[in-house]
Length: 176
Image 1 (cartoon, rainbow, N blue to C red):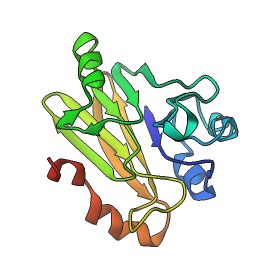
Image 2: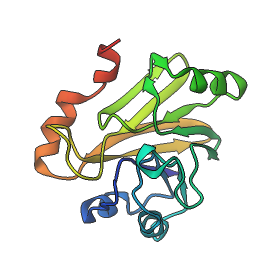
Image 3: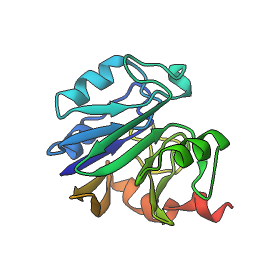
Image 4: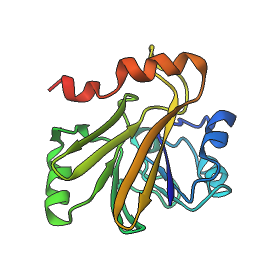
């Protein structure tokens, strides 16, 4: 099963993002959606599980502040603001202790992240919306099968983002 991951569209759903997500069996949006029309366009590709971000007032259509979904035996937890994977917000820590997840999907920082800590994978696809600083614009794709993540890859949405993905990957861990 292919899981497309997108975040921080801020109301801009680039044609390149739609193309990159084609073929996904399910799409996860990690917040700062920027309008229900973004979710509607994504739903034309595949079922969507989404969380709203701070620009959405943590509410956008049926997207609230957090979400959970199990896909092919893999437990996903979505939140927009995580802080850092090694030091998640206390609310996230409490939620994961109460009900563990295999993959935590988050956004907000616009920085790409893919790191396994203990038995939990933390994924931030970076921003797919308006460019911020020299950060990449990208989405991520996970392949899951029978309760396991088989592979993950980041898909840059323009040529400039190829190098930016490498430069900025997992910076949230190097900051603490």
